[in-house]
Length: 283
Image 1 (cartoon, rainbow, N blue to C red):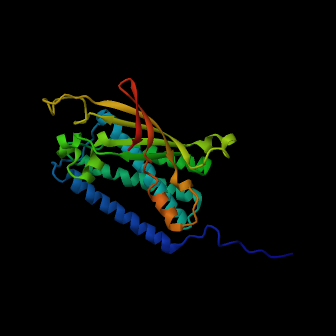
Image 2 (cartoon, rainbow, N blue to C red):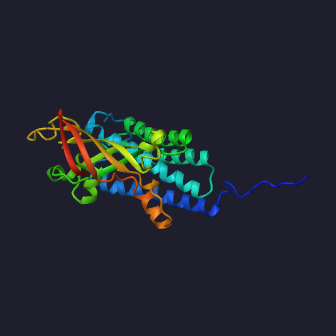
Image 3 (cartoon, rainbow, N blue to C red):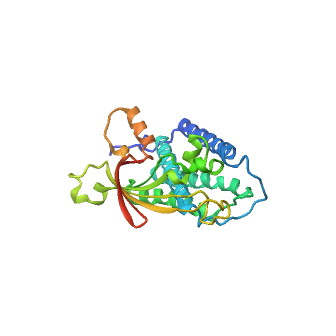
C-alpha cells in the first residue's frame, strides 16, 4: 500500500501577506476617519452621541452610496485575503465583516455631530452592500451583480459649496446631484443558453440618480429663497465588467480590478419626471 501525505500546498496561509493586509486595513481605517473628519466634520459643531433619522433625505442617494461602498470595500478585502491564501468561505466572511465594520465606524463621527447623528439607515445600507457580496460569492462563486458608481460635476455645488463641496474631490464625495449608482448585471451568467453568444464581460446596467438637491429634504426652511425642484432619475445602459476581460498581463489585470467599481460611459436611456431622454455617453 502506498503511503500518501496530505497536500499542504493548498489553501496555505501566507503569514507575510496577512500582515501586509492587516497593516493596509489599519492604515485605511485611520486614514479614512482622519480624512472624512477633516473634509466633512471639521467645521461643524460637535455634540454628545445621538441617533438621527435621515432615511428620507437626498432622495436615498446617500444610502446607495453606503451600500455600494460596502460592497466594493468588501470585495477588495475578500480578494486580498484570497491572495494571502485564506480559504474561500473564510475570506468571504472576513472580507464582508471588515467592510461592514469599516463603514459603520464612520457613523461614530456622525453620532457626535450636532447637525447629523448616528443613522440606523446608513448602517442597514452598509449591511445590505456587504450581504450582496457575500451571498453571491457563497451561492454562485462569482459576482453576477456588481454595484458600481459614476459621477459628473453639477452647478448645484457652486450654489452651496459649504454642503456640496468646493473643490473637485469634495464635490465628487458630497454632491449627490452628480452621482449615479448602478446595478451592473452579467448577461451571460444569467442566460446560460446564450453564454457562447454573449461576451462574459458585457453587462446590463440599471442606474439611479437624483438632481435638484440643495438640501437634504424638500423643505425650504434652510434656503427659503431657493425653489426645490428635486427629482429622481432612472437609467438603463450597457456596461463592461473589466475583471472578466482576459489578459496575461498581471499589471493590466490589477488595473482592471482596481477601477472596476466605475461604470463605463455608454449610451444611456433616462426616465425622469415621466419622460424618456437619451445620452450618447452618460457619466
